[in-house]
Length: 491
Ligand SMILES: Cc1cc2nc3c(=O)[nH]c(=O)nc-3n(C[C@H](O)[C@H](O)[C@H](O)COP(=O)(O)O)c2cc1C
Ligand SMILES: [Mn+2]
Image 1: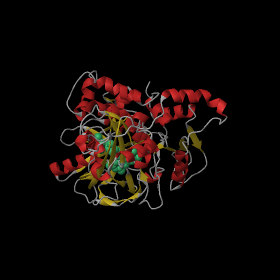
Image 2 (image 1 turned 90 degrees about the vertical axis):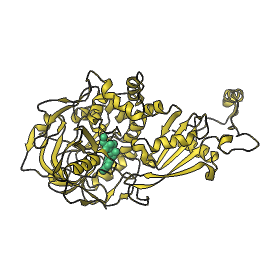
Image 3 (image 1 turned 60 degrees about the vertical axis):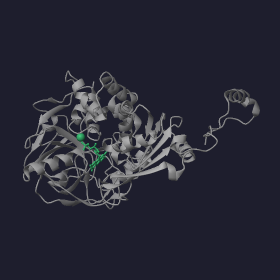
Image 4 (image 1 turned 45 degrees about the vertical axis):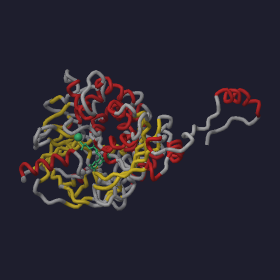
């Protein structure tokens, strides 16, 4: 059975010893993030702040901030189970291209088992407020001292493609400007931003309607951050993940649907001709403040919520944070799809310190000249992986999950001038080092063994790794206790 809603998951977390209730009064301005930062970095539990200062509603944070909680959220023992399910749907057809493959998911789910199901009403409608509402009632965090204000950090921002009518769901932070308006920080390349651009070029004026759901069952919450292809409804994907359709209800003031189980729903619009507003700064997932920029303003027309809504949020900042576990889930869930498209890929790792976009380590089974560079180009053309600033490609005998091993072997395998390649292209909006916002360079490091055809023409062949032979290893293991050295700890 899928989790019915956020509180159903909270119950499970509590039963599993993965949730701590905090009854002391704590300020959503800076204090909650200081506490959460310490807890996440120590591998601690999800936190339910029952008495955030200035609000009647509790705050849930760090809900998915460990591998175990992510597994619980997706109801699996390990993330590879999700990957295996995806693979089983893709295996028996052979569409062209990765995106085509992902796009087939809905077709393959022919029975419609995963499609969102429209229902008439749901708990998110327990309280409907068309007039008297204010964002100030909710315990919205200010995360870092220099932040431009309070930010809603885990909103499921729902829009419709004005041309196809297809739904998109994305998590784009929302800076609170006043009681009824926020920023809408969809970055240039994201689907919400594309809907906005298309609406502007079609109508020129008018509104793009938006609904924002905050707090739902965990798979639905996660679906908003997944890098699925444009025009693939994230709620369909959520249905696939939870093995039960997402139930959606129509909004009160906009022509959109929201998860019926949502804790809080904000309905509203952005003005297609309205002025942009300066958004930021915000202590971001890079660990640095992302710079201010102009973004559209979201005007709220109605708020609906449960009688006793739980405000779900997350924080970002110097890694690792909760979002590392989300990125890791993305890495594990989509790896088999990448491997189907590029069978030479053995494994992929995005270390926490690389904050996803900055570093991707890839091992490949190399069989022809230039193959590592082909894989770099593949990654740079693959959905949101296009943002990857540095790609390091190694041979399949390097364990990319072992970052020390990668450092050691990759550095030994390169002649930097020969093996490093630069390209120009789109970069993450948050990259403060790029020459311009959204545009800059990326680097690929070919750290595979070089073939003669790749310019390795030395007389002697590429050396083998120094390894003790098995017979001697066994012999030493057997005599170990007699040596009197005692057990050793690996440093
Ligand atoms: C905690 C968190 C906050 C995020 N904030 C933003 C944001 O402010 N703007 C943005 O464009 N993407 C943000 N993202 C990343 C997007 O949610 C992600 O790229 C998603 O795939 C976008 O959906 P889309 O592909 O439908 O546009 C955030 C992700 C997380 C985990
Ligand atoms: Mn999308």
